[in-house]
Amino acid sequence: MKNKKTIFVVEDSLIVSEIIALQVKMKLNCRVIIFNNGDNIFYKINKYLPDLIILDYNFNDAELRFKNGLEVLVELRKNSNVPVLVFSGQRDKEKAIEIIQKGANDYISKDDDDFMVNLLTSIKNVFKMKESKKNIVRLKEKLKKVVFLALFVSALTLTFLVLNA
Image (cartoon, rainbow, N blue to C red; front, side, top):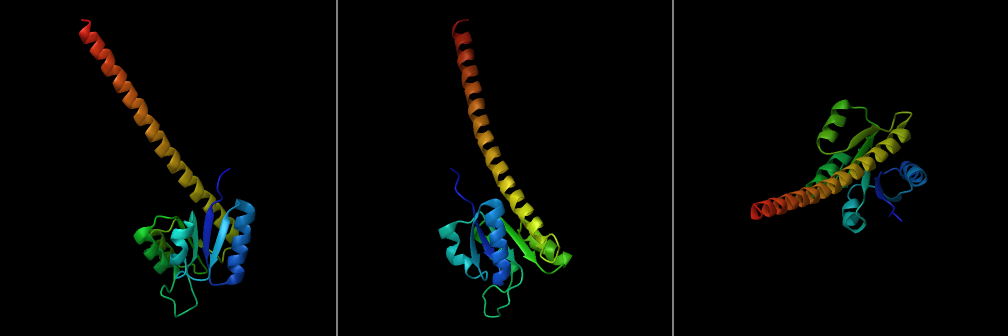
């Protein structure tokens, strides 16, 4: 049986994080761990090794080390390539572009009517991409073995032909 994927939801609104967690659990059968800010995930990221992080852009606490999702993303990218989906109530296209350029896999506006559909679709796409990359690695390994075997057989055949000439 496959292990459940683990998703971190980083959102300071308990209601929003619970809605996201419920939908992700129901529709994608994933384990969800909720954090109310970006500071907290760095204590748990190595223990739980998330398959994906869903990260809010705005945090409403001036005492935090990381004031927003972009700062969390930049820190994450120093040591991790875990996929990150950033969402926000902002519709600032420049901010969205910056977030993608800094390493987010997607940027989703939570003010859109179809926010949850877009979020779930984006999660599915990230997981499909990860699976495709794994398949490519497996195929490359198989190809290496086939090429090695073909070269080995060719070398044996050539040796046999030379010795019997």
